[in-house]
Image (cartoon, rainbow, N blue to C red; front, side, top):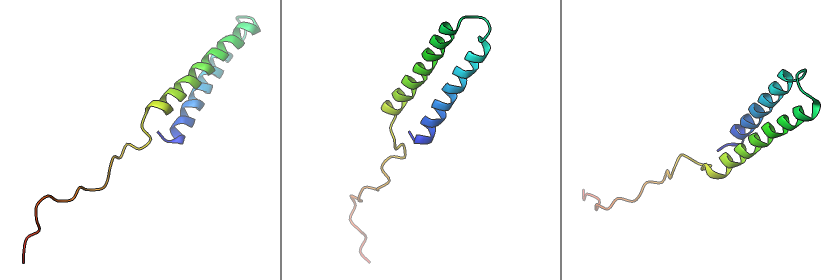
Length: 75
């Protein structure tokens, strides 16, 4: 997985956390807002780490062709 994809996941998680923070701004106390914000950021960070850890970095595979098992034709 490329670094750009991980950065995009982190940015998307931060955007979601800020959106939640803005929506519930006037309805609950500051401690609850910060706790929820922290949970969302933690989930985003763990998700990005799991994706980075478990997905292969190179998905193109081996580009080298195996050698031929048949003998070359005589001219």
